[in-house]
Length: 170
Length: 172
Image (cartoon, rainbow over all chains, first blue to last red; front, side, top):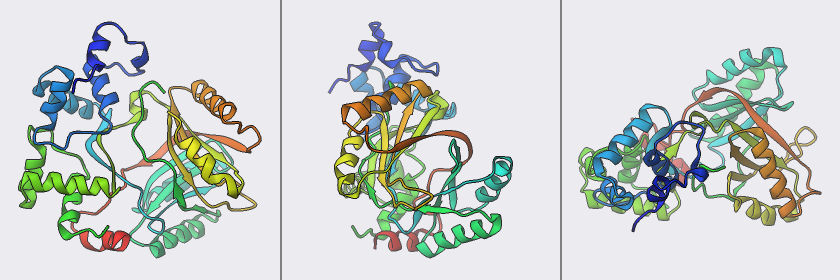
């Protein structure tokens, strides 16, 4: 099954894939076309190479280079979110002057894997993931008592979206 | 689905990505004492069971220059959450769409979706299109753009060396 991405990019139709980061045509196609449906076959990189009409080594080296430059985290599986009870999204309304200090306090917990600022009264958002719900709640309690700031606990109730990746033209 | 010990070992090995070698599934199998065919078959099963959402290139949006990341939160009447959640989830550029509990009075929003884009204007334009296209003008919503990232580490499904208990509790 041929993938037209590379031929259309090389023929000058670059507008839809005009990316902020400097990328080659092959890189753009690998990033845009292979966020899902990666071949479950003996030689997946060779299969991709055949679809794009390049060679296997180019595909492997290009993916390695994208990884080295920090544009992809890996090639592989994306797991469904863990069941409610073992992870949650939490938010705090932190006085702006204390944000960095409190964020650092929150980040020190191993169970916190994402910790972000957002522009809102609730300005600190983080994800807590633990083996069981009791530990998740314990972490939230420790954060609350350690900072004196209330924590909103917003566990997933229902996912409407199966993450199929992210087109480069957004 | 009930995961076998083999599944858990396989997940522990592949959660950091496939090796960039000609036969990655054979390489993974060699680590686990499984054939290439067995690895592929287990992965197909994990995917059809929904535990693996997708297999492919995992893009780092921020590094690529997609810096405007808006969490849009909506206060949707309970009876309509399902319909509107499904509509939003169908939109291109919406990357996540989750229902979460309200925490009144501080937090009235029960649906969260993520819209990615290069800059704020394009994200806000996309949101306007979504609102008008689906007639959502009367649904209260607000946009929370992301600021600094303080910590980011991919959620690990299983910790190496502690594979057994974790997934059993999750899925056993």
